[in-house]
Image 1 (cartoon, one colour):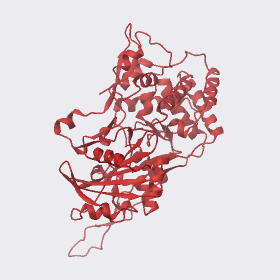
Image 2 (tube, rainbow, N blue to C red):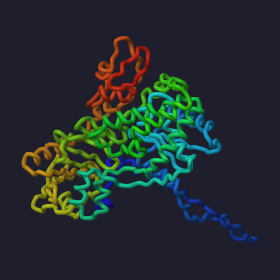
Image 3 (cartoon, one colour):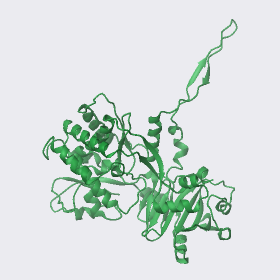
Image 4 (cartoon, one colour):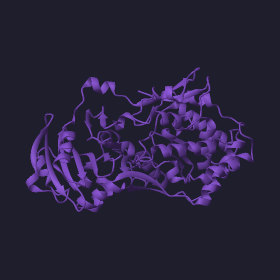
Length: 490
């Protein structure tokens, strides 16, 4: 069954080395001694006791770390966030509360808190903020939910993009296995009510202002979030259940944040520390982490696992927690790459007809070779989709390509075959040259423009829009010489 065999591309190696770290219970040893006599004394014999059950908070913490790439180890940023939280706590209505901060290794833009005071913020959110007041506004909003004792039940769910959900329902025999195998896995957070969100906004703005931060940081950051959402509209990053997704980001909230801020000060008052904040961001990872592999246009490269492939023309790739997913513009074609464990003695042709996928055409199954690697291919049918499947044995694992189309044709099938034929091993030189993108902080000089900096941005498309959003600039904003800005470099 696929539920037993499938593992994620980015986690399949790490599972062997980090399994122990994911355990939430520790084995406790208890001893008992026998009664001594004149001839011998029995030493205490350790006896295992049942492992304690993890608490709800421990389970939730484990789910969050697994869904958001674990913790991002950056002492400078960790210290920045902790110092900001400490100032906010001292100015809060409940200074006795204790908070534990975790910086998550995810490009998604999100922050949230558990009822026990565990605060989480992604590096993607830290990268989007442009000063300490903006960061403080997000942290204070989440602390506001804790202070107000709002219900903060959060759960992990498998949620699917519309096209991929059709693939699930059409082809897999076991619906539960299908949800695991083909879903875009996300961590979803229980939504707060509109009233609770506004209450947390009000608490957060007041807390930030009393702590000495610019009270208008919340409205600026919400505006940046809105522009970022507009920039990313049409893209489907399955991990990016961002701040606007789990916290309604309406124009009313921006207006409300401005109204709250005006109760405390006029614009321009309070701590912002724009330059100091950006200095702390210099050289931080931007986008995907090396442990996940990288999407570079239509190409996916995984230097740690040592392979690469290129998607068919017109496809946009998403590197998700469960798999690499691709969707062609218009939605008529989709693809998935994941990895499964197949016994070395089992032929790949036998695997393709082993029942993990429904409606496989037995007559279409054949052995092939892809760049020297043993492989097998087959076709399958569905109510709305036609499928071309490939299984490629690479080292001790089997990589599984599933291509789907609504309009089956020889030309489309040839494009699928051409794509899988790009699957190959990376050379050591290639692996060493592929690195994550990073933020670089530069100072604006006379004559510098957003268009000029956009030419230096190592992003695949919409570089100018990305530069403006990343630096909190509107479509017509100009740059002031002497200020610092963020650019994305390799």
